[in-house]
Image 1 (cartoon, helix red, strand yellow):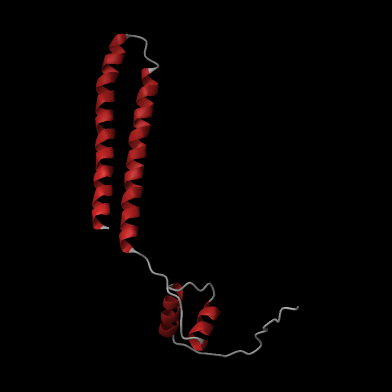
Image 2: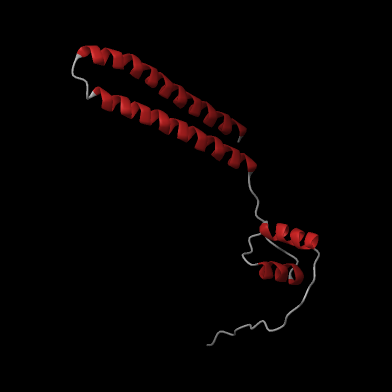
Length: 127
């Protein structure tokens, strides 16, 4: 069985003002259609077009999580560097100085973890 091809050989010429064209492009960009010609065909023949919708709360959640992930990653890198530096010390005076610095980094790390927990709980409560 052969597949019947649909050759589109008829052309409809349509002139638009720049504002009309911009409006059509805006509506087209909000759809799932990949080609403008497909979009126009659907509107003319079917009258139905699938429009993408975005959940603003998910966008807000993802923006917050990305920011918190970057902060957490930076704090984790600082801890890693501090522990690496500990392994280079040879006498106890250097180790004591390092401990004070390290304690501040650990405190900052746990503060960030608590901030992340709080944000996740806030988003969970909203949903």
